Image 1 (cartoon, rainbow, N blue to C red):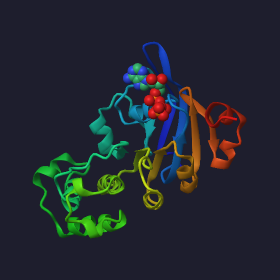
Image 2: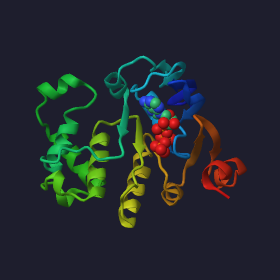
Image 3: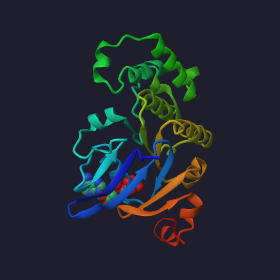
Image 4: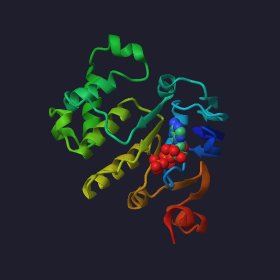
Amino acid sequence: MTALLHVDSISVSFDGFRAINDLSLTVEPTGLRAIIGPNGAGKTTFMDIVTGKTRPDSGRVLWGEKAQDLVGLSESRIARLGLGRKFQRPTVFEAQTVAENLDLALRNPRQPLRVLFARRTADDRARALAIAEEIGLLPHLHRRAGELSHGQKQWLEIGMLLAQDPRLLLVDEPAAGMTVPEREHTTDLLRRAAETRAVVVVEHDMEFVRRLDCRVTVLHEGRVLAEGSLDHVTSNPDVIDVYLGR
Ligand SMILES: Nc1ncnc2c1ncn2[C@@H]1O[C@H](COP(=O)(O)OP(=O)(O)OP(=O)(O)O)[C@@H](O)[C@H]1O
């Protein structure tokens, strides 16, 4: 299978400090991947580079069948190519209802002109309902997003990203601040989303990562320290030393 994303030997320094150090990493077109690692390992910087927020000093970020290099492209251009990013804190439109939030996302897909000229089609309506059901918010369609629980806001934002049908979804610490049932729902949601696209989850919570039941990449000092199943990486002595503690 051709990789969807191939990060090839990227490095970036901030004030002489190498936050990403010759990092190479490959993401397949479908499935879940968890990225873990101690504070300062470079997880956020990795996502910043892939999404065009930070430009690497060297290396390439190759995307899709044509291995297009994303380095130097704007964040909006990269998003339009099919990379969606979910930040840790939910950023939904609090004054709008769940339905309105999903509508906005559906009318703001990867073609920016569509948002200007779009009329709401029956198809959009059906998709909004399908997404609301998928994220578990069908009973809350007409509530303002600001009234939702933290977990529900996170699901709404994931739904808004799914509305844009990204080929790769990058999700930063989705389980933070969630109750146990909310975490279980989030796991299900991400796993289903990963049936048809790549989903990369940066997460500290090892129980959550275990539930994701996927390939895990451990970052340390800006490079890959270990990769494989969670059991494989957590039995690696280097990972135990730098991340898990003895
Ligand atoms: N814009 C910046 N300017 C200076 N240093 C930065 C900048 N961004 C990141 N760093 C440094 O780069 C290193 C990697 O940071 P990064 O946020 O990517 O780590 P992380 O793995 O996401 O950590 P955490 O788990 O704490 O979020 C850290 O030492 C951080 O202080």
